[in-house]
Length: 381
Figure (cartoon, rainbow, N blue to C red):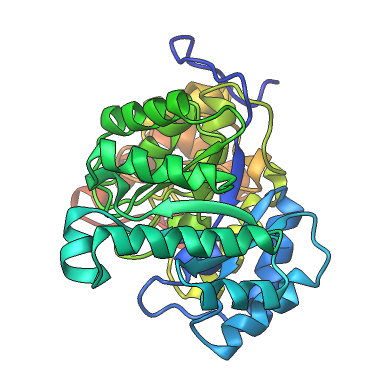
């Protein structure tokens, strides 16, 4: 049996983008979240085993523990390339070099609001400092992903000038950062298409999106459609404020919706999700796509009847592919087929399905849910 059915109207994507996971950096910047070096090492190992090609493992200037974690992960011999975040300051880059990482995400900003209230330098000074740090990084053989924060609120011409200067000085990749999640998918796709058109073919384009309006995954996918070579994600979509594009959503959407080759080992997705949930102490919402408790739960009688015949009637893909499981829930919306199926699962049998179903609906109409214990009690009369 096929594990998913495609929408025939979706556009296809020919190339498979690199997944750049920033759970250990941007994800950890979620208020209240802090990973120990040992936690980071374990998560990094799971990410690499999942098939993630690039891991942004931390921001070494933050603390000694952060630097230690980066060094530990860099020395672990993972198949993934390890990145550190660096401000456009030579001393930051020096720390990344000392940590032994493969590359850096080098960031600055020339957006009007950042220049006025954050940078404390003229735009010319900001650019000069950024290019100096970039050249230092390249002199030390680092892969450089160059990013201007708040790119989506920066005049396009000014961003173009900065990114071309970075390209001339050896930047391997430029990021289009929607730092506060304000771009629509249409606008974001336009921006990425523009930079894919004007940058050299061997200069990679990366996309980094935030979820302030619930558009992080949509924007990330729009960026890939527009030609991005890399897409930034976090496990469970954790991150500052409302979070980032979700690793699970982006990886599955690329394969199921856009028809790319498999990007990750899908069988490991749920275990990694639960590990990050545990270490971050951020509970996964029940209705979270793909990994939430309700993602493959069914109560409606019409749905259950069809799902029992073929799950793909009301599921986007088979849950067991990612380690999830399907659950038939009994409640006021249930029908006879759901009752029969649930009783069979519980090892029970009844000739009076209609009577039992009627009692369940009466309980549901009072605002109560139905547990297996409730069903057993009803069976006993």
